[in-house]
Length: 376
Ligand code: KG4
Ligand code: ZN
Image 1 (cartoon, rainbow, N blue to C red):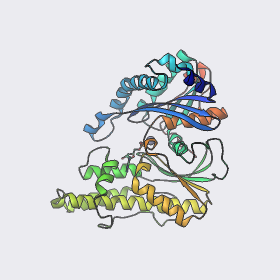
Image 2: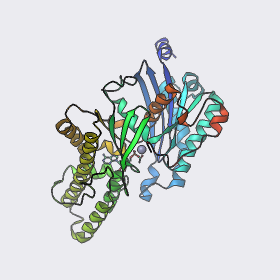
Image 3: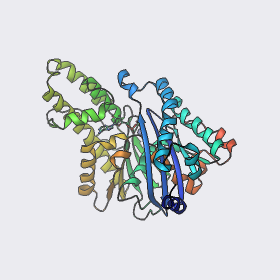
Image 4: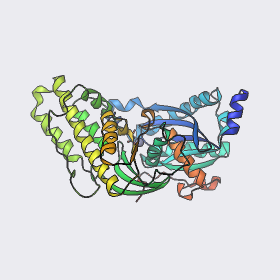
């Protein structure tokens, strides 16, 4: 390690290793926070390609893949941070290890937790169990506008967060870091799941969200009208299963046009517009009724271009004085940097709710919580 790098390690207030294995990404990341600022973030995300041939994530297969991919991801991360694939060298500079404890696939979560248990013995480090959704929310603090404001809450809260991932669609009221109240959630399918299912019906493969969105760029978003259930209901819940069914019936009626790329692009653009309109409308109303100072976007679907643009302009036009932030694209879908950042928030406060402690006895008892809900 050269002198400059050595000094940088000394200057850091906290150095965190993050580990994420809740679904089909085996990810490891290293984060340095200096005086409330994100000073350095390095990450490795290994997406398990094997699930594409099954058209969705197979839990047992995912767990076996994590056991193979996670050690390689850690070695690759060590190479990025200390210049060689040397786990103990990485361990020497890390202050604590943050790991996703839930929600997610229980067998996948356990691989991450067991790995961290082994590291806690080998490295004698503090372990922090992190909520995966909270990780997605914290990813907003990697944005240019917020990365220097980790410890500075002035003017940001309360915030309304639109969480849109493969398994979750919910609106959270964020009163501060680590302080959440659930405002509403989907009663059936998640937004990401709806993107994926529509894409599958159109033969676009898995994961379908990004593929559908790419195709939609060439289509006419006003070509077809699909239902937008619960759009005008006074509560903050969502429902997307009716949209999925409507798309299925529509495509069954139009089988003759399924080989027409122009037609498929119009369907993709219309489905995307429908999902985006519902998400934006419900978020703006939730932010208005809670007098939120900030609107945040979180989860894999936060990578969707039209959603980012539409939410930004709706906040600017309809919520005077409110600010809008979004995670940088590389931190939207599952990654471990966001887990390290959420770990920082809890480690800094020594928050007992993170479900862990410093002693190995406590870490031994740390369990996966596949249904862990934020803010309930
Ligand atoms: O948060 P995430 O990476 O995994 C979960 O925690 O579920 O979210 C994955 C979801 C998938 O449904 C994927 O299709 C969707 O995010 N997604 C997108 C885009 N990128 C990822 N959906 C629409 N447009 C995108 N650009
Ligand atoms: Zn996720």
